[in-house]
Every structure is written in structure tokens, then in C-alpha cells.
Image (cartoon, rainbow, N blue to C red; front, side, top):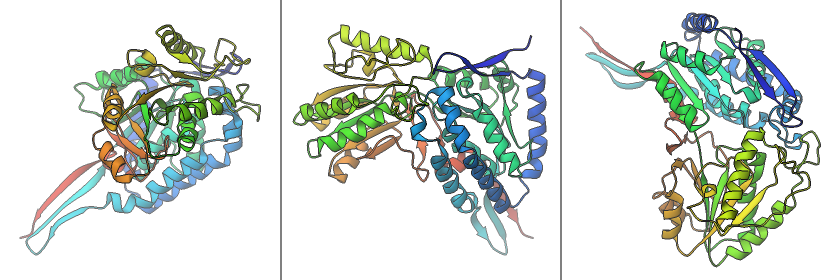
Length: 458
């Protein structure tokens, strides 16, 4: 029996797109074709691979007007914010610029006696499993450098953004990348797990839930397939006593609420020095009260629906539990809140780490704010989490921020900004956020393997 993947639009609950899943036989055949094509692809000059990948990226840009509308329908992002092309182009462009240096051989000796060198080899077939919240941005992190490094790529996108993978592959194949080198696949969970268990892939890059990451690692157990994961987050912000609380609130609240809080590195908990607490909360509340919740196709909408009613229900539950346990809600229910996917944003004070809203990933438009009396207290609270993706520190003193950052269990430390991915830096995490790293030189290292040459000259 053929299984179907169905994208239900959060705008009105209607079916927006459907695609049939591939059978195991069809998916296995696709993987074999990719492996065969990769042998030729890896032999092409690096400059040619870079040129073709960047032409594919430009093709995504050419589709941007359609992409913006599709994203609104599929996952609820307001059209006023446009698509993801600027970030896609920035990340792919940076990886293209550093490719030659990042992939160059490491020469140990080149003498009359020996040639000793370490070269970078493509992994082979890379399986990219991308999430729905930023479907193009998250996918390009692996797709562009994987192809540039000489790998073939199979891309499996989330059901909520069913059409994104099709668009990416179309843009790249129209740019001249061979069809078997970059394939979009529609797979159910069972077929995906079976392919991994059968050693169909040489490297897997998964972005998604902690449960999904565990499933990937379980499927790969014993195959020795590398698995890179970016999973959950509960990213903290810390506002110290030497900054403008209004400026900190502008960035941190945007980092908490943009995309309805559905960002991997969204700010989900904020710690403010007690001397600035009241001012910060007042500014934060003013900002959130100014949002317009509504249909994402309306250009006046600043906050769209969550991607799924199920996701909104989890956020509502966390908020209700916190209020029952003594938290104070500062935002009245918006008139447009329908009890479904359209969810009012919320700011909570009086929260503690005994509440799920300060421990579990919310992935929605809610943030808890606590006051602290010292850096020591803030560090302890920021580290009191099972996740570790980013932390945002607000201070005028870079030395203070770096010293605090050295004690934080996180993948990225920001100072005076939040919710940004710098392609020159490794995007990585620790604890239940996962392991591995995308972008930067290290991203290339994860998508290739070292190969040593010890050549004795007679």
C-alpha cells in the first residue's frame, strides 16, 4: 500500500500538498544511482562544482516570490518577512569562497626521500534530513558544502514543508548539476530507518527533534555511518547590569518571537540583572503587545500561526502549567487567537526552573524572564538545561562576556545579538542539542574524510 505525506496548512487547516512515499526498492535504487554518479562528480574540478552549486543557489533566488507564498501556506511565516534567499546565498557563498583552502591537502613532507600528505576525500553519499522551520536555510548548510566537496546528496524534507526539497533540486538541476547527484526523496520513517540500517549512506546530517535524532542514531548503530545532529534548544539570554535594557529587549524579544518562536536558536528564557529587571520587562511587554497576529498572507501580519495545532497545544499547555504554579502572564489573549494554530504570544515572570516552560523546549512565542543578582547565579541558571545550542550575553564588556562564555555549556556564545548564524563559525551544540558541526572549515571536515599518503621514493 502506497503511503502519502500530507502538508496541512496552518492558515486554515486545509490540505496544501500531498506526495506519495517511495518504496524501499525505489529509494535503494535512487541511492545506487547517486553512488554511481558521484564517482564522476568527485572528479570534476573544484571550481566547476563551486560554479554549478552557486548557479543552483541563484536559481532558488529566482523562485523567491513563489517560495514566500508557499512558506506562508506550509508553515505560517508572514509574507512581509520575505523568503530565505539572503541567508541561503550568504551561507552558500561563504562556503564556496573557502572551499579551496578548506579542502586543500596538508603537506607534511615533499622531499627526495618521501612524500607525505593528508588529503580530504568526499564521504560519498550524504543524506540530509531537513526541518520545516527554515527549510531552505537549514538544508543549504549541508547541501552546498556537501556538493562542493564532491559528494552526492539525497535530501529528505519535513512533511510540513513538503515542496521545499522539490524546489531546491529543481533549481540545482536546471543549473546543470546531474539529476542523480542531488535528489529529493519522499520517505516515511520506516523506509528511512531501513535505508540507514542497510548502509545506504556514508554520512547523515539530521536537524530536528531529540527523539528524531535518537531514531537516526539507533538506525545507524553498527553501520559506522557518521551522524551529525542539531536537535532541541532552550537558548538563554542574560542581560547584565551595564547595558541599555531597552536595546537588549528589542533584540532578545525579537529572538524569542520571530517566526512565532519556531527557531532552532530562539531565545526561550531570559535572565536579567535585578537592577534592570522592571525596565526590561516593561519594554518587552510593550514590544509584544504591538504584534499583529493573523493570516500570514496579509502583509500587515507580524506574527503568523504556528505550523501545527499540535505544536500550539504544547505551548499553551506549558503556559497554563506555569501560571498554575505561580507564574504571571503579562499579555492578554489576542482577539485573533482561535485556540488552534493561531496562538497569542506570551511573556511570563515569576517563573522558576521547576516549570516546564523554563526546562522543556517550547518552540513557540513564549518566553520566561527571571531576575538574577550576579553573574554566578546567571551562569548556574543558563547551564541548568539539557540543551546547549546558543547563549546571548548582553554587556558593554567583551572580556566579561568571554569569561562567562567560557563557563557556559553551549555551542555558540553571542554578545549583544541573538538568533543569527555566522557561516564563518561552526554551527554546533552540546548535550541534547546534538553533536557535529555545520558550516565553516569544520563543516567541510565533517562532510569529507582524511586520507593519508606515505610515499617512499626509491
